[in-house]
Image 1 (tube, rainbow, N blue to C red):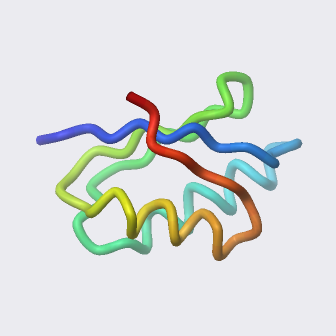
Image 2: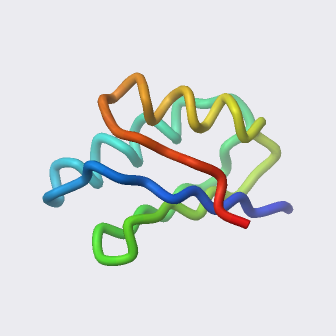
Length: 68
C-alpha cells in the first residue's frame, strides 16, 4: 500500500482536521487518511491519485501540495 503525504495549509482547529479527513476519505482508492493540525499535513494510504486528493482538499477550502 502506498502512502502520499500532502502539505495542508489553512487548517486552524480540529473542525478543519475533520473536514479535510472527510474530504480525503471520499476520494476513490483512499484506505486511510491521517491528518495532523500540528504538522499541517495529511498522510493518505491507498491507491488514490495525488491530484484527486489535492482537489478534494481544495474543494473544502484549504490548500494542499504534494510533499516529497
